[in-house]
Amino acid sequence: MMKNRFVIKIAVFAVALFIMHTRAGDASAFLIDKIDAVVNDKVITKSEVDRAYDAEVLRLEAEGKKPAPGLRKEALDSLINRILILEDAKKFNLVQVTDEEVDKAYESVRQGFPSEEAFLSALNKEEITPAELKENLRDQLLAAKYADRRIKSFVRVTVEDQKKYYEENRNMFGDKSFDMAREEINGLLVEKEAGRKLDDYLNELRAKSSIQLMDSE
Image (tube, rainbow, N blue to C red; front, side):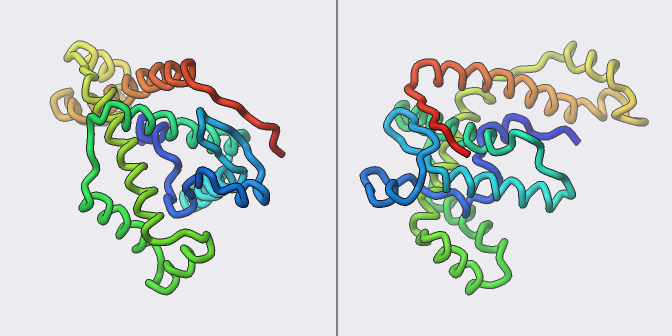
């Protein structure tokens, strides 16, 4: 199955719990944590990147896969991308995230633990409160919804493109006729085009932003 490239690019990896807010103005945090990047006025610490990296490693291991070289850089890039998309989303205010959506995402994370005690223990270990986790999830949902509205909702695929893909990839669809496979093909082509447009969009955001990458181990 083809990966949802669009979603992967806007996500800050699968396990939201391990990604912390940057606490602006909290100088004590910076004294005990290295800085990996500064995006406009937002700081990304080494521990944030480590958590994003660890979360993706866990996801890959659960799928029986091994981390590829450069995964940590991808984690940093994803954190940078989220900051840039969030800033744009809050600037234009095109989409909103409801409390119900946040609660649903929070419950999804909570159910990933064997018990309420284990969930709260994990939060305590990461020094994050339930309220902070919910706010982080709200930001992730806002970034995803904004990118979807900003890019994916404007992607259109022609019937000619669908038929061309079907003919060039007949082995993927077995005995399915074009009509039977059309919806699946459209989804694949939309994701592909959305991923390309997202690359262009992120490049535009980066070009007009101040991004400082620090030396890190």
